Amino acid sequence: MSRAGGRVLVLVGIVVLALNLRPAAVSIGPVLDEVRAGLDMSGTEAGILTALPVVAFAVVGSLGSRLAGLVGPHRVTALALVAVTVGLAARSRADGVVAFLLLSLVALGGMATANVVLPALVKQHFPDRVGTVTAVYSTALALGITGSSVLTVPISEAGGGPDGWRTGLAAWALLAAVALVPWLALLGRDRGRERPVAADRIPLSAIARTRTGRFMAAFFALQSLQAYAVFGWFAAIYRDAGFSAGTAGLLLGVITGTAVPLSFVVPTLAGRMRDLTPLVLALAACYPVGYLGLALAPRELAVLWAVFIGAGTCTFPLVLVLIGLRSRTPEGTASLSAFTQSVGYLFAAVGPFGFGVLHDLTDGWTVPLVALTALVVPLVWCGLALARPTYVEDELGLAGEVTAPAS
Image (tube, rainbow, N blue to C red; front, side):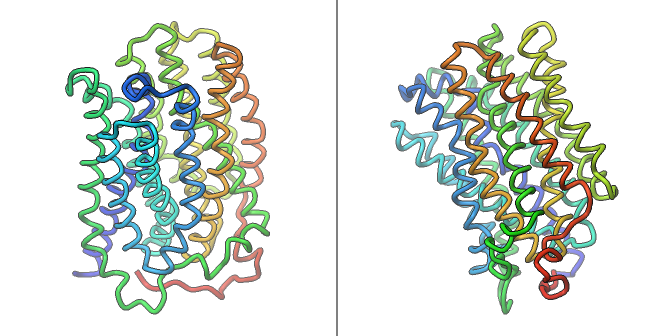
């Protein structure tokens, strides 16, 4: 295969991979009530389920870059998609809560591994197009979120009966199986390399000592806390406001759909801007407007508030492109990605779980929404700390010492 053809295949693989990085987590929200009824799941168990994505991303994601160093990033990506496919297919048939949670963890573990490796693959194959390629795969990721938000309920209803939700969840295993195809063709990219791009060239403990690493992890944690509270609980807010399950799914789709075009625009702008302060402030300001509007008028202007919240969630593609922009090499990107996502997701687990606890304590959604609004303040602080160019290799005195294999 020619070099140009190889780059096209990698790009296709990156896009279809990104489509599969969220359905395992997001598809639960629209049918959470049906899942709870079908499995006789308690409120606490439902809270664990909604928090499970960020826990899985934190624990398993920390191993992703090391696995890439041992067997190669392309092979690890293929294995991750196998885990997603098997986990999603098997959990749709699970009859017990424990089995459902464990199989969800398998699928989410695959997603977590791919999450960490993907920025390093972009840096390795497209070092001169980090902003543009991140914009492309961020858009694909947003499409995957939107599709799983909007389509899970209609697919479930087409499945028929009280167990239709199983069909709705199983459908996303088919998408993961399709995404596996180009990565099987790319397995040979890791053959013959003396050493693949690996985070153990720059240990995570070293990243933890850098200012950039710490602020990246905090920024990622705070934006993930917001996003997973939204994905896990906002369909329930809409249903409690009087909307049907289908309409609640559509409103959640408005949130995720708003992020689709912005997921292309934000990384592209970030790649061209030297000072990201205006971008950080503009995106973060959307959260308070959406949250407070939803608390005060959940039905009357539901679509408008959903648009604002969706714009706020685009702090996610911003932090993704920052992982590449705040490192100089694929090794630095892999290490920064692993540290940022594992530590970030660990603390982000507070979001969906804490949101549910506040709802149970107050028997309403106003206090949880106000809490999310207050957490925008530290989100902005961390974003502003990363607004101007810094590089982890420079902070560690490694600039020019770590090199990457050719793509």
